[in-house]
Length: 259
Image 1 (cartoon, rainbow, N blue to C red):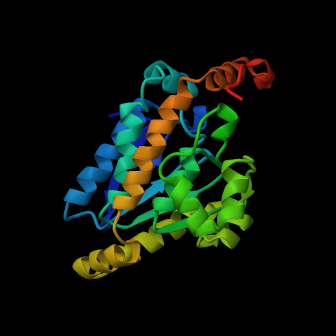
Image 2 (image 1 turned 120 degrees about the vertical axis):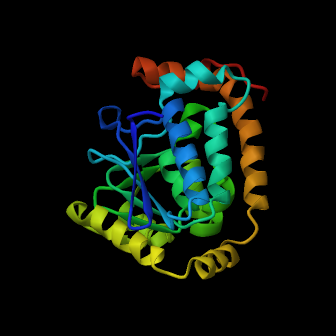
Image 3 (image 1 turned 90 degrees about the horizontal axis):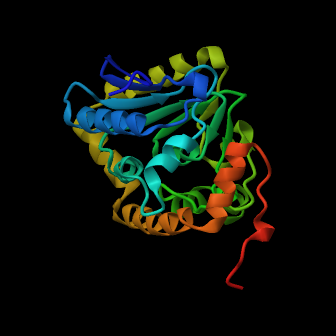
């Protein structure tokens, strides 16, 4: 457990709020573990009908905490706490509603493709700069983003690294509505409470039919993790991370390539 994630339950809705605004809600190992535990426990709790994920301080999440990530990865495999969370996402049994205000970077964007409803503020910005760090997409985003957004827009985000404002994400089919920041929490909770009032078994069955078999998503998640780990140990990733920490542009031209 960590104070950087706040868990609460009301009206059949479990709220998971990222509470590390001073660090732009960058996710640490403890935060991943707390979120994963909360979702697993909420799915098993009859009192929970839906999950809500929110940020704080005008930020949804800046993605993985770089220092924490480097300290635990060692270039051998995707850190266990990360893999446990992303492998859970396609297996969540109850509806997930997200409210995004401000930056949603890396996993802050890719986890949204596993949500059932997403609301955002006009200041929300979505970015997946994996390649800029010498890495590859995760959380099955290499599968889900082209399927949802179309290949061209997905490639623009995942490969070119272009940030998308909320308006483009509405066009891409990720966001249900853009609402003022002052109304975001209320809008998300309104939707979550409405779902909590539905017949639970019918809701579960309808959602299962709409989402389909999660095995393909889990398979892609695992395949991404293998390549991600390989890339994490690469000279490109080391240069990208070092440049990030030193607040300078990376220089990939000096690295040897395989041709």
